[in-house]
Image (cartoon, rainbow, N blue to C red):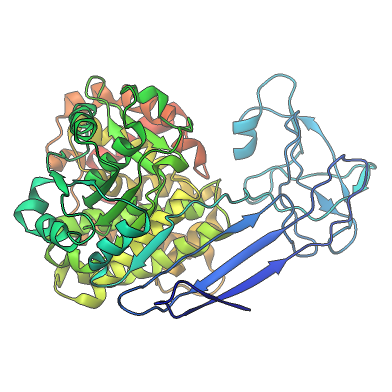
Length: 542
């Protein structure tokens, strides 16, 4: 245990380090020389009102995490796509494992579907109950550390994170810490009309007496809107950006900060490109949904093709986030439900994602607990401060979770749905969440059962299949209780919808997000999911 002091005004922040190092008895036969190293930093920060700092630092989880005796999991795939799923011939880490190879056909298991082709690739024999390949007996064996193939975590977070009621009052301190003296405030006309933009300008006046306001952000920001904002930014001589609003103003601000004085060519910035850092952004979210204030992702709609361009790189990470739930007290029920279900989708998808890790798991579970318990109350009792605070914290936790793992099939399909039909991002996720979850659960029943338990759904211990059934019922019930329409009920024209489905499928696949799903959907399966989502009233677990 170690005590750190952040500045003269801060109280002590207690940081606990838990380091687990597995004794990996690596044999020379496999040529692997990497030792397991897992580091978890748990931060519990309590600071005075004028200087509250909360910081979750890092978790690194490398190639060989600890495993229980007799537990068979996937390991590092070799260049020939030979899965390192192994069966121990003896107990404990360092036991001798056995391998058998055979020809692999595409789709024999989720991992093979991603990593193998019809010709020349191999994997390890029979399918296991979890849907992945399982080894069979072979006389060839070697001694390796027990393997649990989980993506290692490269954590990206804002450098300053203040979460509490009234956090907006720290805007001057945040700007001062990062040396920002002439920021541009990017927001929308509602924030100006509600007086939130003017209040923020006043709060920052001691540090930045001349903060200009750009209030022409449009919902689901487009490349035309981005071009306009860039022109304003370039002409003003600004040295940073303050983003105030929901996901749209924050996403726009992050794009402006990175593109800066460069040419507006979105292809240079879309994932997986890794652009250089730009101007610092201090983000203040006013909805409990997108989590954009803590993520390295931004989404801009191409005005010509109507495709939503996902940009995801550390350069898009705000340097500071002031998360103040008091901004959400006046949010109407519709906005609260859409953004809340967006945050729930972030949490669920990051928890089941193929890119998940220990850091994202902990945040995702915490977010599901907060949102599952409080979302209905926040919608029906808008002045309930406990529910509003829990939803805001849950949205931020879910944002940190998916930013350091990934989203998956729901988001991949929701982006084109929103872009082509003008459906808000959170609502398009909510429309698809029950249907896509029903499609995906069979690939990872245990993980989806954990989601049900995290959300507070009453399930008998060990009854995973029943937990999944109840999870699907709860997702349908949430949509019903919160009045989430289907695309048809929203007014989407039947003929235009199905004419655009093939294009939406192509755009969803091109985004890369569906490849993170526990069950990989083919193009025809995505077509069926779009079809089911158009009119579905309920989803029966099969």
